[in-house]
Each structure stands twice: as C-alpha cells, then as structure tokens.
Amino acid sequence: MATKLTETIRAALRISNKAAAITEEINDCIEACKRDLQQVGVNNLDEGDALIKRAITIYCKAEFGFSEKAQQFRQSYDSLKVALSLMEEYQTAPEQSDQEGSSTEEPEQEGAVDNGGVV
Image (cartoon, rainbow, N blue to C red; front, side, top):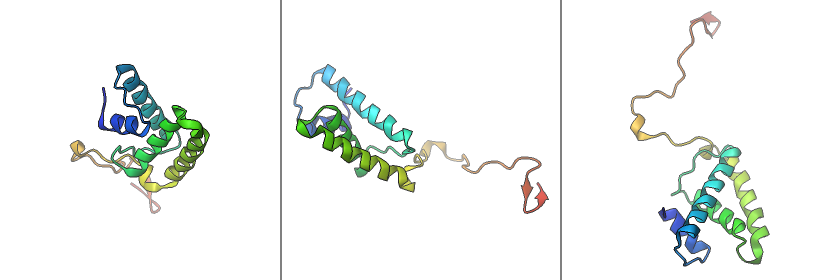
C-alpha cells in the first residue's frame, strides 16, 4: 500500500513506475530504515518530521544504489543517524493522545526508600 511517505521516496528516487513490487520494495526500505534508527535509540519516528523524512530518503537512496553516489548517501545517512541518536527529542516516542489518563510516572514501590525514610 502506497502512503504519502512512499510516494515522497518514490519521487526522490526518480521512480515513476507504480508497480506493486516496486511499492513493496520502497515500503520495505522505509521500514528497514526505521528499524535501523531504533537500534541506535531513535524512537520518535514521526514521518512528518523533516529530519526523520530526510534520514529515510537518504537511506533509501543508498539502498537503491541511487546513481554512483550510493556510498556518499550511506555516509550521509550514518552521520544523520548518529546526530538523531544524540538528540533527546528523538529518543522518546511521542505520547499517544488516545492514552489519556494514563500516568507516565512509575508507581512507588512498597518499602522503597525516599529521603532516608521507608515509603
């Protein structure tokens, strides 16, 4: 299934063919990039975010062997991946609005020590 991001990547790769096999390969590449980013601690993978979209685009260009510059795209992606992994705003996935009322604080454990006293 083609998404807006799929079509953005298809255009970046200069692919006009809309065959299902090519769409599937693009989607697989997008998912592989997201997994690669998660492995280094990037958990905020908002597809509308400019840096995430750029990372996915560069990754796909490197994987598709886009022109003779595939190695340059890989190096560029690796640099952006490291930068994203160091940025705090990308380390935590955004909270979902459908989880209203749920607390993000961890409950106190019985018998825990708080300022020298047992809770």
